[in-house]
Amino acid sequence: MDEKLLRILNNRKQNYPHALEKQFPRVFSQIMSLWDTPEIDALFSELMVTKRSDRQGFPPDVASDIIYLSMVHSRQSGRKTVDDPWGHVSEKLRDQIEQQGVEFSPQGFIKAAESGKREAIALFLSAGVEVDTCDERLWTPLMISSFNGDEQMAELLIKSGANIHHRDGAGYCPLHWAAFNGFAKVVKLLLDKHANVNACSNHGWTALMQAATRGHLSVSHMLIENGADVNAASNDGWTSLHKAAANGHLPEVKLLLSKGADFRKKYRDGTTALDLARKNKHKEIVALLSGGKP
Image (tube, rainbow, N blue to C red; front, side, top):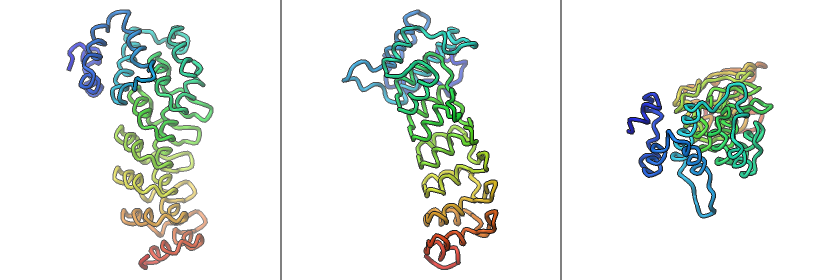
C-alpha cells in the first residue's frame, strides 16, 4: 500500500483503494503524483465523466475508489463549506453535472439517484454535497438506490459516507426497501455494512416482514441468518408468518416455521396465520399449519 495515501487516510486501511491500485496502476500513480497540485481537480473530473461513446468507464469497484479519493481530497483541501454545501462548487463542475441532464440542486441530486445516473451522482459527490440529502419523503439517494436494487449506486453512496441507518418519514430504513423488493445483493451489501436487521418502522415493521409479505425467500433466509427475529410483531400484531400465510407464500411459510416462527401468535383481533390461510383459500398452507402435509 502507498505510504503517502495511508497517511492521508489516517491509516484507515479498510478504505484503501485496492481495486484502483490493482486494476489501473497508472491511473492510481497519476492521482498520487498530482495529489498536491492544482491539476488534481481536472484529473478527477476527467476520470469520473465518460466523454466518448466508445468508452465503457471503470468497473464499479474502481469507480467507487476514484470517487472516494476525490471526496477525501475535497475535504482535505477545505473546499466544502458548512454554511452552504451547494454554493462553493465551481462553474465548471456545475456545467459537467448539467451536461448529464441533471439540474445542479438538491432536487437534481435526488433525481439523478432515481434515474440511476451514476456519473452525475459521482460528480455531485466529488463536489462535496451532502450525501444524505433528502426529498419530501425523507428518502436519501441510498434509500432510493436500495428500493431500486441498484447495488453499484448503493455501494458508491455507502463508501461516500451515506447513512445506512437513515429513516424515512414512515420510519423505514434502506434495508426495509431492499427487502420489500427482493433485492438480495443490496440486502447483503447493507447487512455487510452492519445495517440493523431488526430495525422497526413507525408501525413496527421489520425488513423480514417486508420480505415475507412478498415471498422473497432468499432475502428472508439471509435476514434470518443475520439475526432477524422471526417472531417480531408489528404494533398491531402482524408477524412475518401472518403475512406469508395470508399471501399464499408456501416456501416462505416453511422457512419461517423451520426457523422457529410461532404459528400460535395472534393479530390484534385474535386472527392466527392459519385463520388467514383459510380465509384466503391457501390449502397447502392450511394443511401445513394444521399439522398435515401439503
